[in-house]
Length: 292
Image 1 (cartoon, rainbow, N blue to C red):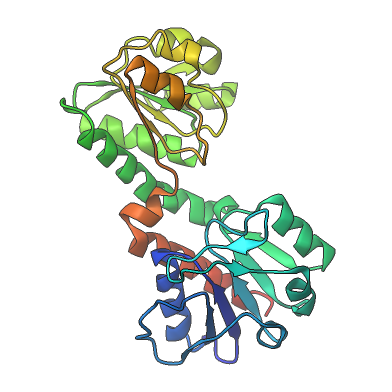
Image 2: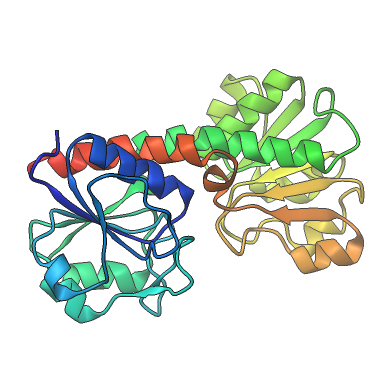
């Protein structure tokens, strides 16, 4: 139970609603900042403005999955106005307060370091990222289905990157009946790709390996599907790029060449916000209690 624990939520999307509800179910005291347009159906959740008074006695401060922008703003689906944090706000937080975010840009990381605050990046935790790869993979495959006129079964699919999402996408595509090849840099990943029954290729051979594929799923947040690669690919190929913005595809050249390429970051919050929120909620509430 979270009885006696004070938690403040700053903005976010539909995923954060699940976290808020879970915290309330565990009897936490919950403050909502940046939820002006949310119809409040949660007993004991208090809408409030961002102030030093609210922040100074918190046990946990929960930011959106997207974290805080370099200009110190935090976006919220439930408010027309962004929430703006300042250095004064960070200074007001107790050293016991844990700050949760999905990802952390430099300004957030440095602010927490400067004030001795514990920053927890959820998307770097395996318990969150591995489970999150499920809605990511389902959403990516759904997009591929919606943007092709052929079945994934029997098609040639290339997955770029063999991290948590790449592995799940490859496994699901193979389960549907696709012929799957996976590109990676590390020799250990190439060995595991082969062991799992996929065709493995080093990314240094990407020019050759993508020439005849029907669908490409990119998970690498770096320029990998370049204009040179695209110039050799079939124009009928569809690219689903789920890497964090701006992705790893040259979208300008893809459009010029007539190849359909779609950037789709943050798929869990779009295709399965309830499930994605529940995954985050369990981890956040567990870690709030850890050494509380």
